[in-house]
Length: 215
Image (cartoon, rainbow, N blue to C red; front, side):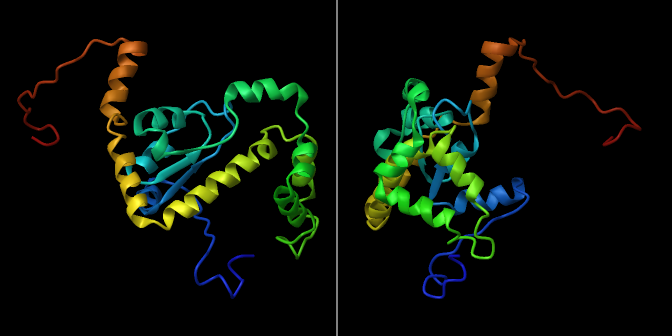
């Protein structure tokens, strides 16, 4: 829908890069300004993509979930955009959660959901997203509607901050500088200390035998 809009497509485009792999990641991570890590708090055990984005200078927007928690502790709350319910709040809300009430209460959210439901983004098949909307309004197992207002507010903060390139650049540098502990040697050493408990092995270079590969 955005890509075929002649009034915006020269300035804003949506791209999907299929078959995500290391060779693509090597291009995506350095190119990104913002990293979205928006799993519902308490639903995502951990993650490494957000670390790789942050290590390449991208600012993170996300919930207090998985590795986002470690990143916030490392880079500081001022250099990450945290939004939404905490894991404890999700648990407390669960039995009484009424997503339809959030839909009715927030005009901006209601308009967005209605556009999806009535086929604005799928004019060739207007009922395509009916099952998705029904799921969100009546069940919403991932509390998407509950987090929507906070997510929208965080995105507005990002848009405003990005206009001030001096401040944005400073935060990006501080974000990157705070990521020094996220490297594989430390991680493997901690895994070994806490889980594997393997004895370190010193590898010495011995003489090569004639006839062996590389001899």
